[in-house]
Length: 158
Image (cartoon, rainbow, N blue to C red; front, side, top):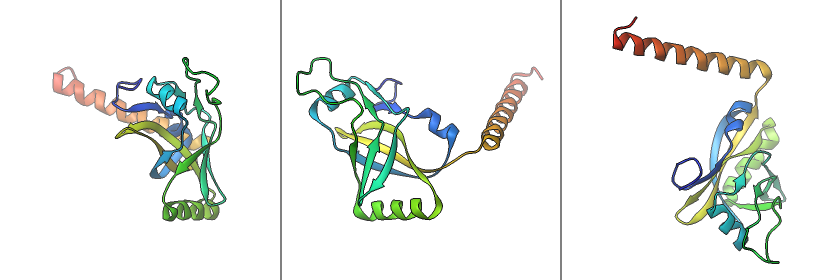
């Protein structure tokens, strides 16, 4: 079990949904060292400042923090090293084209285990402006108020 009770989920980037409009998602493998996997099994990762770039026909993940393995020796990994993401060539070309054409960005949304492998959910996203964020908050509050009113009606209080 992951930190948040969902099986397999190691870390999620909850802030990304607030800061970006998600257009498309991809699942990518990630090339890791042995001590990194051991640390991830303990749930010690953070996607807070992470982002992905396409460079030289490969996708790289920057800013992912995987804490050093407590029982590691001199073979321990660097916590914020750049990690290679594993995607099919067609997916990489498609992502690179969309990023170059429309100024989108690649944001890691979640880090999780799938069939024993560590996977990253990448989102092709467009940054929200301040008024977009306020509009999303107002919409969420209105939906919450409507749900609360329906609940009161069902209970006979309204």
